Image (cartoon, rainbow over the protein chains, first blue to last red):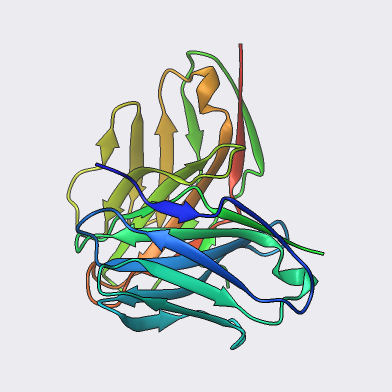
Length: 111
Length: 118
């Protein structure tokens, strides 16, 4: 069974630009959640989607948004990038039994 | 107050020995789940083990076991027979509320960097 797939693996953007990250969950998993990992703040929850609906949102500004498609694939968008947005962005998918499986992450560098 | 506390920033262990990584948690919700993840330098988060708050027995997965002490609110990870490939960052995490529903938000600890020496 294929795991959680995140694309791209690496991104370099400049301040003010926007970026879209993609996540394909494990087949049959309907929940997709996103996390940001930085050396200073550690792992922080961004948001979670289930059946195309955002069910949970972390404490991030409105520049961070996401969506989920009918095939459960999810995208995360960050607009007006800031230097502090440089991070590893991790996507996780889950079945209804509650365990979360993560992808390899997208490492975003903002210059 | 921190919900997940990992008091060991770094740990060293000799190959083939067992090691315990500490994790304490704080929640008032009677339903919760506890997770351990391994993160090698490559960045991927590898799921290791899960313990639900109502599970009667401690979870085990191969060389990994979770020493769940509910009254003390601790969920320590025990790795038996350490291998060089076990060298990585280890994170303890908690999900509050019952599995399913809108409870796929994890709160993570700061992590413990485990180094396995040959």
